Image (cartoon, rainbow, N blue to C red; front, side):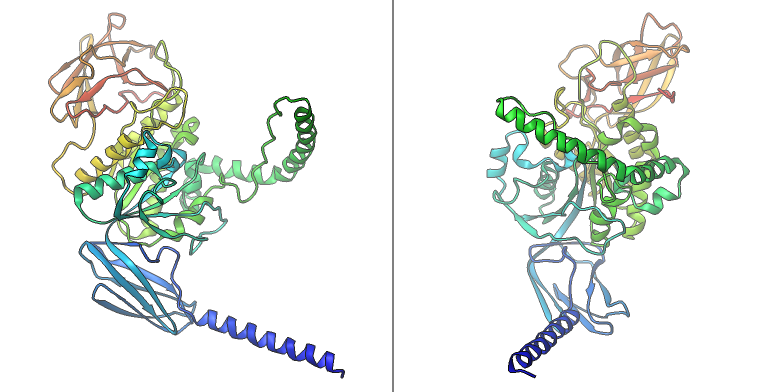
Length: 515
């Protein structure tokens, strides 16, 4: 054998040994999920899970805030301990020791909330009303921010692709969820405890993408969701071929437009494949499952625009999603706070069908009928020409009011008026409300607007309305025998029923008609 061949063989053997040594060391290292990092917030007042991986049979010790717990990795190399309830405070250090030691620093103990949904939850603080000033003033070292990477998966994942906890400040809050930040800021100010916010959202996504697959599969009402997805996967190869052909034509047209100084035509949209954000359970698998079972207080949810055309289905889908999250998290019926869709698009000169009103109604019904849920009404913060209202401050504050009153027991008015019933009194209908606070008012001091009434013909007309105590009396000279009332039932309604605390009434209807 030549010296050259001998050197090559020896080098190869050394490289193999080195690789095996690195692999063995990697297998031996105790590891934590991406959520467990320096600067994180651990939930107070509850048993907090801490988990990770190690070699099968490896002994692991977790030490934090005066507690030391031991575990042994199972046959899959997985281990878990549960910290005893802790008081708010910090910073503290956490150490996790197996064959190696991990040290996490600047750890706080406080409130932890997940912030999820589509683009209005994803909307960054820097682009909210007075965004630059808000970012510059965001010096809150006891608020910590974590953003889950936007990913899709076919199966539930055990960990996120990446992520890091950041201390809230002008350099970190600008890209973070505006609704999440303003919500967390209110909690921090009112409770005076650390707050951890986990942002997991994706613009333009539907509720079924955030729902675990078993919850979708077990209900026949969601069969069309699975059928539609199966059809998309089956037709994907042909759709991709048409897309590539369209792209070739577009490139030529775009080049010609550039030469002629004209605007390029619209670029073709790539069809959705197996890892599309539209995949049922795809976002749950990649962006929610890896968070479980991290100790959390609750969830704030701003989504629905992508499901507006299927509002009737959303009545069952959103509660199913919530139930699935709660069952998998195994932390009971934790609070789930829902932002009702804001006003959007043009105002209507007459009462008519509204997909957005129907979706808001589905959100209202979910908050009313699902345990430990609440609604933040946003019917007055929207912009006719923009699906993304910039006023995220009021949205965050109203979510915080709901949390402070229903979760933390503060003696405050947590919501605007919500209709609880209706009684027909001859040619008029009397509406009853809860959350009236200091009393019902017509904002601006003018007459009440936004009410419509219908008789047995189910044709709605605008109605007169006046406040009588904690009730509203509604009537129209065009409807002698009213049977149904709707309020703010439009994409972008003109409405002005509030309570004295300045919180708007939720849109509602007293009928259960299909449209």
